Length: 299
Ligand code: CP
Ligand code: NVA
Image (cartoon, rainbow, N blue to C red; front, top):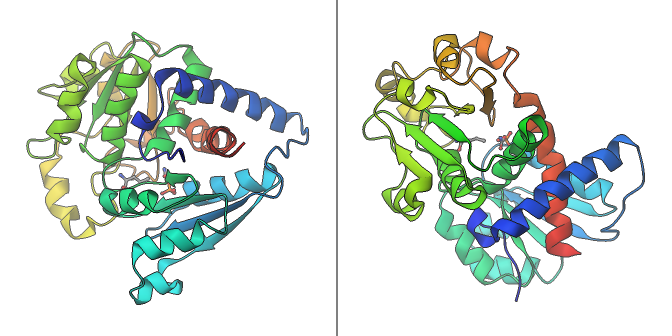
């Protein structure tokens, strides 16, 4: 059976931990400039319906470092853009490459594509989940603070795709996630309830942040929600992660953001550019974590 990576729930907790450990090892190998062409000759197709800096560059650089190659396929340039069915596109491309990385709006489209693909399909972000981001974020926490199991994480902001992957991460890695969002902007109740005690909504950003080991946020208006930007900015007043919120977190609390970030909106400049922020490590670790994922799915 072809293994796909559509959400963190496609792996066991043990496999996810192994991926994080392998990512740390691959990072060290790259730092030593040792050749590591473990996937020589492999081809990766990237189909991105939305913009990307980190995800695209990390997959393209990653597969190159592993000895393979990538092709970036803008949907408008594929026959997909002229109405060729998604399922047919999946059947065809998956007969030619070794894995397919997709960034799209509706998660259901990704699931349909994977159902017709002979090779692993990787979720590079949908409206529902962003699991590759969480592999990098888990690696980053482990590198700075050790095991995240038993820790408390505060999500402050929109209950979006990244938040929903943090909920899955809480289940899979054994930490507690406190979620503070404005009313009406919470995560999908099904995803939340499936997490049981691992994730729970709280009444305010202050309640989420108090004593937390890690504070996380993301943009208030995700890709595709540009028209809602102003309405959202009003609804999210009081949810900016600023130094007052960081002060009530644990003394050694870290700050994460998947990026791109909007300074002065969801996060204050002195937080994202301050000493507790590990956002550049998170961004770099996209490379190492996804190389571990590619090895796992392809080797
Ligand atoms: N964090 C993240 O996925 O960034 P990009 O949109 O730049 O890929
Ligand atoms: N929630 C954001 C994440 C970007 C990496 C979005 O979907 O646009």
